[in-house]
Figure 1: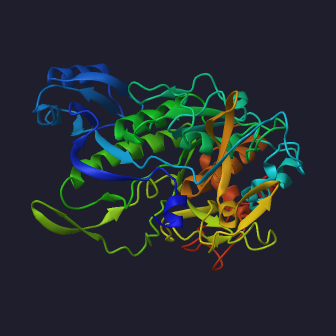
Figure 2 (figure 1 turned 180 degrees about the vertical axis):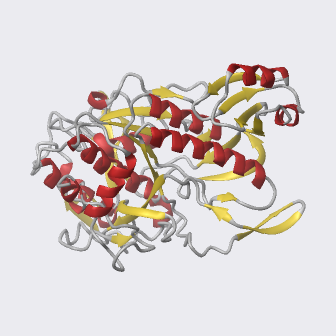
Figure 3 (figure 1 turned 90 degrees about the vertical axis):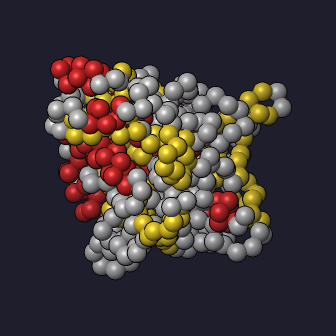
Length: 471
């Protein structure tokens, strides 16, 4: 496997038609943005049992042992569609390099948080400039829809809200497995790792984290039903920002077998994102890591037992209306020359003027060779330092368990940098803002890279935390 392939340790996935998270689980969408008790009774009369009803968006999650349930429910007056709950199998992330901390003997550092010197992304977006203006994300809540978090990690625990929850059957929100990389912890740490004199510091270190588990910490799988419920839950539990660093490798089909069912599931997600906006929760998502031009894709050839066809693919969730899709930037050889450019478009990042809203640090691994460099007392191959460093779970060490940190890369790392800046903006304005106002400030304050104005690589620009809190 290539160095780049090993470095892109983000939650991406493949989609399989006819393979479902639970064979008898369905997403039922009402014709209107409501799902009252009367409609619920009609759906149950068609042979289903409602396990979650979301009248806020007119959607219900239903289980049934009837093979004809979808057809029966689809004929109920007031029902728009009833489709199987599609499972997305996400790649299980692997850390490229990790560091278990002994906090009784930290190395020398320019900051009292021992590993802040490794966070080139914070320098790229000038988080220190925002902090020096007194803005640290106080009175804001960022929901992290991901694979849970390491709840007792020293950089996570202080900011983790008690109403964090899981929508993955059989799994709690807390990631407790020692020695494994946890994607959700990495994302949450980028956003809001506490400024506690150890480890790293998040972009908005006083923001609160609402962890909403929608991906399995064991298999990396998730489903539409869990994501739909997670978005609504976050909106109803005070989230100001919803971060979704997840996606489907290649995208979702908009034509061919299964496309109609997928379209209905995506429509339910759209409703959830729109509802979140109505509750003043801004949804920020990763752009995807296929290196695709989302403006000019001509589709890909897919083949099965019935033959081949050319599928047009929609990036998911990057091309959801109402969500901000974030492309990834990175340095090339930061450890060799810290004064160099931090804003190359990452080699794997999706791009396209129609889809990309902003860009932010995501890391990359294109620096050739395996020569070692030393930064802040840590020695690794020089290219490792071009990845993003953040909390990642727990590690076994002689005598016990330590808080673990890892380097990894992807648009999954870019999105939380923007979520953190959004939290800084909202915190400055008293902890409550409309998403449109937050977007307006992000656009006014971002650094214009590439072609003047909005462009396909960087969207409205690479976010700038210091400038953002000046508005």
